[in-house]
Image (tube, rainbow, N blue to C red; front, side, top):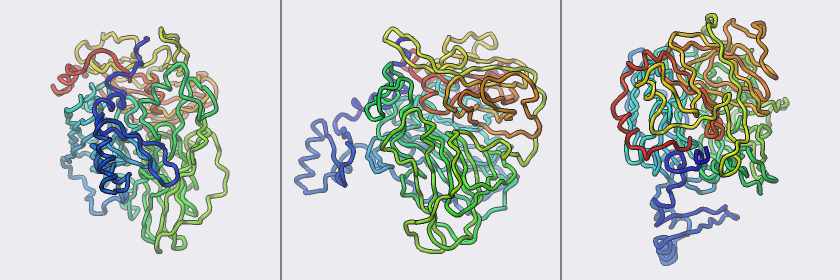
Length: 600
Ligand code: C2O
């Protein structure tokens, strides 16, 4: 185990920068006042300075232009195009994604980021249910990457799930991978995509995926559509933070009041639609807007609200729910909610709030401003709002919206379960040859991705009797099984868990350990979703059907935790896995990996 987390090659997105970009490497230093300071290394850097001085250019401007990394564009409008035709007639939609490093400053502090098509957040993918989606992903990073389509069922196309070490090998630098799959005709609503290799998405590889359908219960019942992308943000690359987080000393505690092995790095900022306190929603009066809120963050649960406007929640993770009015919506990492907001108050500007629930962190960052603001304006020209937050107290519980508020509009009672899996998650100090590490465990397994032989390929070759290495916890079932998955939390913090390839029912949750007894579980139209929050020192019971051939990750979506091993897998219908039409380029790219097991 000693070398498992020594970050080399894939998975540590920052490692190779020094090599690849040596000539014009620019290391940003935190701004002091309004002046930007840079440390420049290498010969080209010296030339840049000389040129900049000689030409009398402003230093920041001169350096930006001569860096070999392009500057990130922030999308300016997050209103969806009203001309998009929502229809049952399906088509094929093509996108090209170029994944690269770029320089950007979403929170005002310039750094290297990882981005899609030089945009942050990444471009909107917009489809109708049943459409075929083709995304050709070109990897221009110095490391391998994958793109995962969060929440997509991928029925029959498990190999397009984009999960490093499970459904594919990382796309090698300089190569491309074509994701081609059909959006399940039963799915509609708000989704997203993100890199699924190490903590790469933390550095910016994420964007929205919206699926329209005339069958969606809310179709035609609102006037306009807008995106609200919430994320937490770090001033430095995640790869370095991950190395510290996994090390015996933990992350450098000097900023956070001491040494804290096992504590996650707290973010430096929060963003709404890719900006700290700068996004604006320019709306029209007297219309109803569907705000599609997506938490694309790494660690942070947000509390979302708009001053003076009641929000009617109508969707949770792609499932339409009976409208419920709230002042604030708690949203954990990877979850989505749609809310209807009506622009029927006094014309003017209002605060849109994404309040970061920093009490859920193990470490606090004194420099973090947890109140992330955007401006919503209608019927007037935008000004800085002086509107008041709702006065009702915010419960600091780090929990989901109460499940009694999540009532699916299309009622569905789960079938009776045919099997039960009990899983315990914990963090444990493990002794390695190089010292101790805090790793995350599902039962007694701490996941480590096999980036040359993903579990899908292993099973497609060996079938049901596949034996996996000791870093994989895989529950294999060759019949269609209705699982009750009981997940117990031996950690004090709450964790947003996501199951790939399925929508599960939430049957119950509670404090302490689950003690069997059907009375605790509700099976009458329970909430259905793909990401739920497991309470600190608590349990959840979910039910799902193993009817989707493939290897499906079930993991905590906190980037740091997945990279520390908080992931297990379900293998549905192995007999059918062997018949999946896995494209040959997938296995070819596995043969092109450097070899060996590397970091998640
Ligand atoms: Cu949103 Cu395993 O991912």
